[in-house]
Every structure is written in structure tokens, then in C-alpha cells.
Length: 275
Image (cartoon, rainbow, N blue to C red; front, top):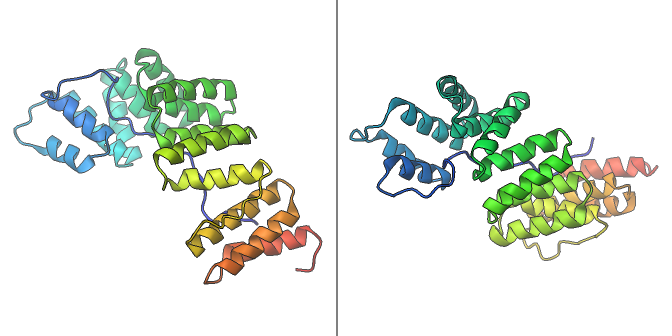
């Protein structure tokens, strides 16, 4: 079995702010929504806990559910969103939150109709469009996912996680050159985004490039990148390049890089060499 040094994954956005409409900072609900959407979760929690904050029960519950979602307590968030949807089935914010939470815990069949309903009712929600795109990716509906990504990126063009997801979608279709452009765009916004960096390496090797990663100063990180490149080259059928990458990964790391060693042994066996 071959292993990636670190897996690349789809990153789902947070369902925080409602429908993108500009709201007054004097509105405490809007202020809490903005704090959640901006990942200021301690602040959002503190605002919700204020004893002088008087809110209708459903609105407070929605904010709590959104905060749970932002904290990655997805099952708990989904349960609360579904309770609220039973009383307010047409609320696009609740549909988006339930759809994103459901997608994260693998309930794609429930997530899809909710995300479709949410984007139809509130087309200004980039997070909902991005989540719908991931659902379409999982189903292999590439035209639909491309349309959803286009809507999401038009609304949130500086979101590196969204750009990374769109790149992963293109990479899954073997459209490596287009994927490379999106991963680089994500890294211009967030240069230390590990998902985009790993995916860029993988897309470059899959497209036929053979980068050496010599500019990577951290030996452990370079070994990981070399291992991932070797894995990708092996999947592309280039056993010679894969073997070179795995061998180099072992050499540059100051400690024994076990994953690359396992992969090198597997590549050698695939090539017919003695194990």
C-alpha cells in the first residue's frame, strides 16, 4: 500500500453570515453573525452569553447552531438546525447550515436538497454554493459543480479554501493545468495554506512536471513533498520518477522517513526489482 505524507482534503466553509445583505453594526444579531463568519468564535460566544442580550428564542438558537458549526461540532449543529427547520422550513440560513453540517458528516442525500433550496432562496451565500459544489463533486456531476464553484468564487473570490476545493475538483477531472492556476491563486492569498501547497505539488507532478522542491528549507517538509510527488508519479505510471522521489525523500530527512521507505519498496516491487 502506498501512502501520502499528508492527505489533501476538501475544506468546507462555515455557514455564518446570513444572506450577504449589509446590516447595521448596532444590530447584535448581525454583529454575532459577522463574528462567526470571520472566525472570531470566542467573541461570538461571549456576545451570545451576555445577560443583557435579549433575542427571540429561534434567532438565538440559530446563532448557537451557526457557532456550533463554526466550531466543527457538526452533528450537534445539524440536530439544532433540523429542529429549527421543522418550524421554519423556508429559512435559507437554516437550510444552508443544515446542508453544510450534513455534508461534513456524510449525509449527502440530505444535504443536497437543502443546499439547493438555500442557494435558490438566498443566492448571495458563497458558503452554501461552495458546499453544493462539493456535493456535486462527490456525485461526479462536473458541470453542476463547476457552475456552483463559479457562483461561490464570484461572491468570495479571496477565499483560499474555496479556491482549493475548486482546484481539487479540476484535479479529479485530470484538468491539472487549470487546477494549478487555482492552487497558486489560493497561495497568493494564504501562502502557508497546507492543503493548497500539497495539492499544487500533486497537480504539478500529475501534469508532467518533475519539480525538485529545492527551495524548501525544512528537510522534513521537503521529504513529505517529495514523497507526495513520488506517490503522484507512481499513479501516473512513471515508476522511475516515483522511485527517485521516494529515494530523495529518505535522503533529505534527518530522521528515517518511514512512509517514503514503504513507498520506495512498493515502487521497486512494481518495477520488478528485488524487494
